[in-house]
View 1 (tube, rainbow, N blue to C red):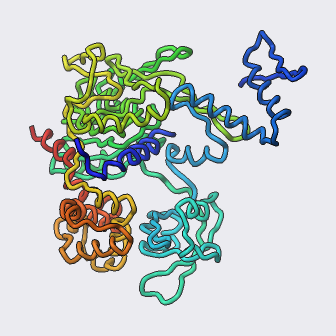
View 2: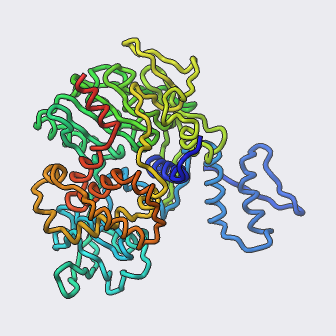
View 3: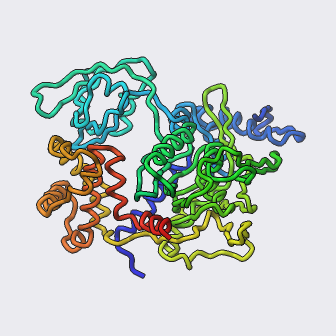
Length: 534
């Protein structure tokens, strides 16, 4: 079957989504004798240090022993399983921030547009908002150094703006309507990272909560969103875990407890050196009745699968979407005195029916992560019948429903990957940031006009992408050296209009504006709403 050219980008997209969602001693001795390495026969593990020291002494070039040791550790852990890993001291803080639920910085969301740092939003209550930085401001200088027009990267921006709490940084911004640069001295602070991206009512009776990760603060974020929706009349709930790569097991357990009655098993873990440990629901559940729907896809992993597996195995709700990633390994983090850390797989987790949904990893790390693309090539993402499941992987829930331990959680209701409107031209303008940059420039130029819409709902109902504006976008893409294809642009036209509208809304109202627009074309959301009405 011939595939459109845009499919060549899917492995990159899958890998980025998954790697971003999922990545979260020995004593040595040595003697040297006449060019041979002597190893204590009673302690064969000394061979590692013997080799390292011998290499340091005899290798033809000078080496950095610390660097060699770290590479040795990395290689050793990588060969255990895809999720055991070594994290250097310099990387540890950045890796832990999303799970801790906060970071230290100035509190802005930004895009780099036309080689300029553009403020998408100043986080309410954060350091930048408190001194008067506004959405649309363009950061021209940091500490007197010009940062516009110098090919700055996201990494460069973070290095300049993030920093320890209570330290100061001076920025100079260009604001529309102001002839001169405005100077701000910002005292960095602790900025929260929210793991509930959005919560709103899909219909008068159905609430929607999207959880992006399972961090230390996620349970509190979830409760706040849930209680808000209850006040708005929610009777049914859709929890969106698509693209959620996981996080803390205890956080997933706490949220599952909200849906299950007292004593119901949520998950259990077991490993060679770790006896079985079970987690059960308590009496605190706030949503033990009412229709519950969990949305999943191939990017849902780890803690997401714990929550979905608990709901499915206890016959509490309906899993909608596609088969999840298949990560059933539990890591424990050990930190070393030099600030580095090791994440070692110490157990597997099992759903209440006894399923271990870890997919095979015996072909190596690269093949393990590429398995997502193999699902696409086999047709599984478009047709549920392409999913191959052995009879030995079938389990039965207390209510008599058959569930599968097939390397991931298989959905109760399958929704295929939506490829309508997707062409090579669409891929080019999306993945090169052309749509995002065009939407930002439009929102920045028309901010006063757009703010006349009182709410995101008013905008969504009243604003449309005109033919004139769409043609402006086409001309903008041509100026940015995207090869224009008229027939592909026509196929992708409605999809692109929706993307532009959603991104304009994000630049004015953040996620509150973005998600209702983008999800108006979301087949999985449509299926969830349909199920709540049955």
